[in-house]
Length: 147
Image (cartoon, rainbow, N blue to C red; front, side, top):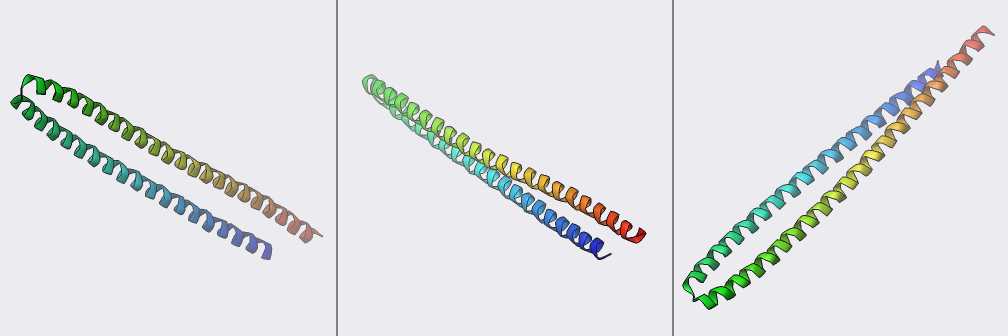
């Protein structure tokens, strides 16, 4: 009887531990989702701000170009093209950095998923072993009752 009680207490402890691990994993997943969403929102705002500034800058540049002579206009168009190329490159760099960050986040999430999966396997293994030991204890208890 004491063995069954001990086994039951061990099972309860394992259940509690498993529940805590699942809760922690859920909390980590929720925090990660929130962090990803926050990052995405910040990036959207930054892109919109950049786009607004670019639009305003292009409009100002067009107004100045109309007021100047053809020679000055040609130089400004060349400068605009150069600026657009730099801004385009900056946007591409921003996209690359964003992609790299998301890939790192995905790598972290995959690692956490793997850890969680391994933890589940460990819990499953411990549960099987506990059941095997419980069967042995019952068998021995039955044998001792027969003897």
